[in-house]
Length: 126
Image 1 (spheres, rainbow, N blue to C red):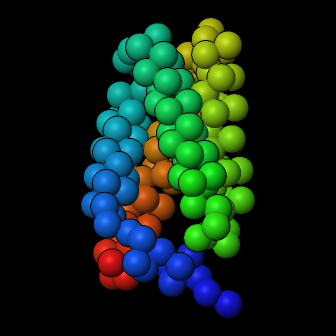
Image 2: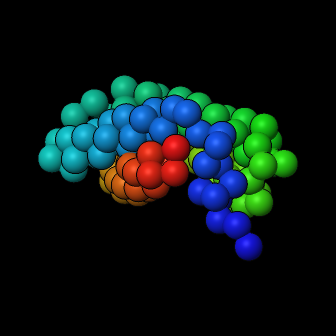
């Protein structure tokens, strides 16, 4: 059975975009961990929109590559989950402002490391 990277070997050209996104996520996550009390309202709106946009892009990737990528359903599910979290954070801003620095920090840390790892694997195959 082919892996995702075997299937994308000829398809991948912009591996560095995933690398940049991963680095951005990690930098923002670390800064949020060191300054969790600043900018709750701005962070709530900014990251709610970021999660919605990230989910939308992941859904778009999954749908457009469903014939080339056997695990496209996982990308679709991840995009849907990101969009649900984004909508939730927009709908409940007061609750979100209490816990958002930690939710966002852990979400960005996970997404950042996974994007960096994904980019390194894509570079190796592309």
